[in-house]
Structure formats: C-alpha cells, structure tokens
Length: 294
Ligand SMILES: Nc1nc2c(c(=O)[nH]1)N[C@@H](CN(C=O)c1ccc(C(=O)N[C@@H](CCC(=O)O)C(=O)O)cc1)CN2
Image (cartoon, rainbow, N blue to C red; front, side, top):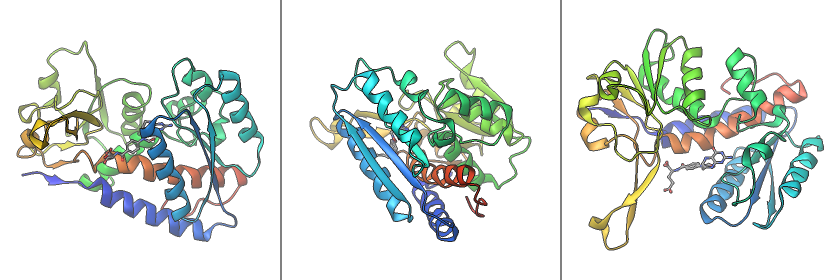
C-alpha cells in the first residue's frame, strides 16, 4: 500500500522555512496580487495568497479591477506595479474574465517580478537553466517527489502526462534539471498505459478525472497527481460534488510506492511555492543573499 505524501504537511514545512528566511532578511518582501472580475474561486485563491503572504511576515498588496476592465486597464495596472520599487512580486490571478487576453497581460509583468514564472522570459530562463522564477505547481511537484525519494532524483524515469505551457512543459524541464530521464506524454502518445509503466515518477497533469489506473503503474512508483477536478458525487447527496485527481486514487494506492492525494496534494504546494518565489524575487532584485531553506 502506497504511502500518502501530504502536500498540506510539506507545504506547512515550506511555509515555516519561508517565515524563518524572511526573519533574516534586511527588508520586507512585497507581493502584489491582481484580481480582475468577481469569479468566486479566484476571490478565495487571492484571499489565501494575501493571508499566506502576511502569515510568513511579508507584505501584500491586493489590487482589484471590475470584470468590465479593458485590456489596457489591466496592462496599465501591471505597468504601475512594475514601476513601483516597493513591489517585489506580481501575480495576476487566472483565469481572466472573457474578452481579456491573459497571455498578453502576463507578458506585461516584469520578469524579475514574475512570481508565477509564467512570462516568456521566465520560460526562457528555465529552458536555459538560468537563475529565474519557476512556475509554482511544477516546483511543488518536484519538492513532493523529493519527499518520497530523497533529494537525489538523478536517473529516475519520469513520465509527465500533459504538455500544457502552465504545468506539463515546465514540470518536465524541472525534472530534467534534476537529471531525470523525462518523457512527456500527450493525446497522440501511443500505448499510454505501457509508457506510464516505465515511470519511477508519474505526473499526470491533463485535467481528466481518475484517468490513471493502478495497472498503469510500475509497482512502487511515485505518483504526483497534478489534476484537480471537480466531479459529481451523488453518494454525498443530490447536487453534491467532490475533488479528484487525474489518478484513480483508490485503484493506484495499492500499487504505488507513494502517491499525493487530491485535495491536499499539489494544490497546497502551489500556494507555498508562491511564497518562496516572492522571497527569491526580493533577494534577486535587491541584491540580498538568498537565505538557506528557500
Ligand atoms: N496566477 C495564477 N492563477 C491560477 C493558478 C496559479 O498558480 N497562478 N492556479 C489555479 C488556482 N490556484 C492558485 O491560484 C490554486 C488552486 C487550488 C489550490 C488548492 O490548494 N486546492 C486544494 C483544494 C481546494 C478546494 O477544496 O477547493 C487542494 O488541491 O488541496 C491552490 C491554488 C488557477 N489560477
């Protein structure tokens, strides 16, 4: 039976390390969070980001724009935050309301303040192995794999299912940077179950509820489940829903060596890694020494 890797527990450790690191800094890093519109889930995520930031001793600025905001208004706000020397990190909460171009808005973020690691410059720095800010969910996935297998992942076979810009591709690059042998699977991949069975570390990241089954796994494999999908749960009552991953947890748990649950797996790590990135952004920008543990 697999050991569960609790993203909640690991995220709490990361948060504690960030709080300790912040106490050693010569100044207080500042994160600006931009929320456009009134999507209820985004409002919750932004609230968490603000409270997480303050809990570890950093400063947060929340900027909101109405759903009717124009592309130019969103970009002007980002531009103001780029110019504001007090601001170390800028996060644009996604998705944006219909009619706004998220990619174009993200490109307006100063790469040195891009704590989500989503700009083209951040992606380029990742590909080139240069110092920069890495996307949070992929970073969290690598940290969770290290919790299972130890810090040395060299030579491990990693299969990432999904080639999205936000998760699949950067996750593959981050495992490659750990000297893993990485394969990215996608909709045209032949014999996906067979390929998955070659993985020491399997990272499903496609948004297809419970797609990965136990017989897709090499016995003892580590499953880092990036999918967070809401499905109907009539067993909980009429109209009820529940969150599941891209892996069928009950089916995979007897075969895997380690597995992350959903909820409580990669999601909390996304939040924790944003805090790490805010400290990194402040240190890189201000020429402060990066404290240990970040
Ligand atoms: N600019 C960004 N926008 C969005 C991101 C992002 O990383 N950057 N990711 C998601 C939303 N998100 C953070 O913003 C996020 C989503 C979910 C979780 C999380 O911890 N989920 C819990 C379950 C929560 C629940 O019960 O509903 C879990 O998996 O345990 C954290 C962050 C889209 N937008």
